[in-house]
Length: 424
Image (tube, rainbow, N blue to C red; front, side):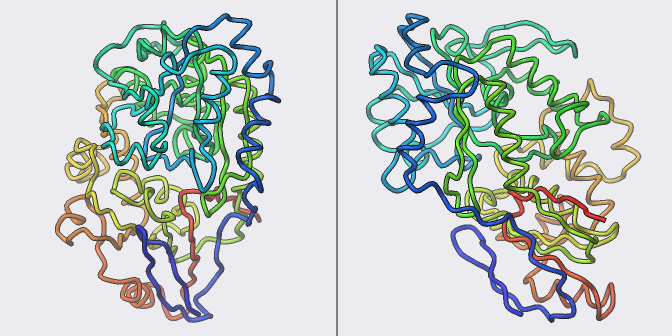
């Protein structure tokens, strides 16, 4: 049996004996919207839980608007083919009376780096970059306190967003390995939040209840929702996509009601049932930009490990041309967490940015054999306690030696999208 998985902008091919194959686990195919531009316009005019966007602008007598965007690491299909959702959104605001020079696109980088101009054009389109104000959030400057959550976290957000007459959230809804789901309220925290607020929220990864697809009882998710209520957005537009990154569904309107409708659709689109755990899971992140660095592939690692037996092998196909990524603290912590006892003893209030992800990854590395096929040299991967491989075939051969000739394998083409559900 022959397979081909995405690797950056290319593919990796491999063969697998039929007796070792449990199945290919991928989201069910859903065709992209036939006319995305028309569907986006319809969503703006027929939202969930709010009046149409134009009416909101006119009722508030809004003179300016801030539209929060996801950065390049999120892979949101703001534009594809002959449509640009951001132009449609901006034009709707202009029809309602907000002039072009009073519309700001605010890139919610959280603690990520700014884009290059080429990356912004790739994400948002030349028309947006050249005709509108596109700004980048800075987690350390021009932030203002909006209050404190019940978890004791003072929430700081971008001052321009806070002061805006009209605040709009955009993004994409998928599952998330510690926030439960991406999209919705994450456009505020972490996207446009202060560094200390992000750190305290993400440090709760050590608490019970945190996990994929969990909202209720998940302290991180519950605080994200609380934070969003401290500075409510006036409108939300979120996409759901298929494996080709085509928009298949749009939710718009009230920042909570529309998000929760999107979560229901997410569960419908991305849930992947499986009946048993495998010795080997071979998972692609889905290619660029989801496999550009070690930090970005954590979502695929966390999704794929759900399919593996304890002690099983999780092989991640990820180009990682950017190495560890911009979060150097993640790499530093991951390379320093040599034993689980030291990791367990770290207190939540001392966890630093990057460390929470390292702690989670380190736990997984002690439960599963996490192997990465990438552009990175062996010594660098092993510094971060991952297992290096030169090819998929060599890992398959190694698994035969470890688990016997009849070892079982799942193949996962889009590890960043699937929501594994064990069915007994």
